[in-house]
Amino acid sequence: MGTHLITGAGSGIGAAVARRLAERGEDLWLLARDAGRAKELGAQFPGARTIVADLAAPEQLAAAFDGQPLPDRIDSLQHIAGVIELGAVGDLPAGAWQRQLAANLVSPAEITRLLLPRVRAAQGHIVFVNSGAGLNAHAQWSAYAASKHGLKALADSLRAEEHGNGVRVTSVYPGRTATPMQESTHRQEGKEYDASRWIDPESVATTILATIDLPRDAEINDVSVRPGR
Image 1 (cartoon, helix red, strand yellow):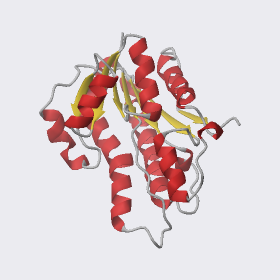
Image 2 (tube, one colour; image 1 turned 60 degrees about the vertical axis):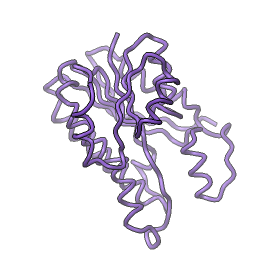
Image 3 (cartoon, rainbow, N blue to C red; image 1 turned 30 degrees about the vertical axis):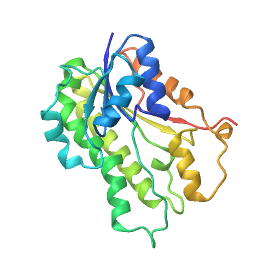
Image 4 (tube, rainbow, N blue to C red; image 1 turned 120 degrees about the horizontal axis):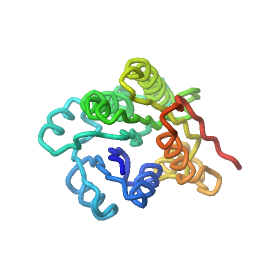
């Protein structure tokens, strides 16, 4: 049985991964932005432990972690949470850039820094759930894509730095996936949302589990998951 710390476990891909790991009897630690969300996650995943920390405030993560119990070792650290605000470069204010960079890039970097000794102790795996936008940027997607391009750079650098410590690092690039975040994205785009057109979160969860379950003689560095219909 392994120990897994997951951000974004409340819905979508994160919830699918957490549920599958819970069904296997794994030890779950779930990040929650506040006490109310922690209570909801506790009810959603009985037996899981929660850590209260807000990805919107990466500069406060160290203090938040210092005040709460943490696992001694982490077999997988899974960065799945994210936020998106669309808009043209000429229209997006600094706050929209800051919010997306904080949640999608700076907080994953800070959480990784804070928990890396525990991942090293397990020779564990760090998974960054990125996006197709982390490989290609389109009109209206500048800030979100920039945060995800940065996340790719973070993962690539970390992989090179930690290979000798036995830590594996994987970036997963899902295409449009049927999640609450995707529904919000469609509203921002002014488009009708039809979940049946997009990837089931369970399919992305299957991909993530395959990367962490891979035997130790191999490592999946990058994997793209695209809609099949």
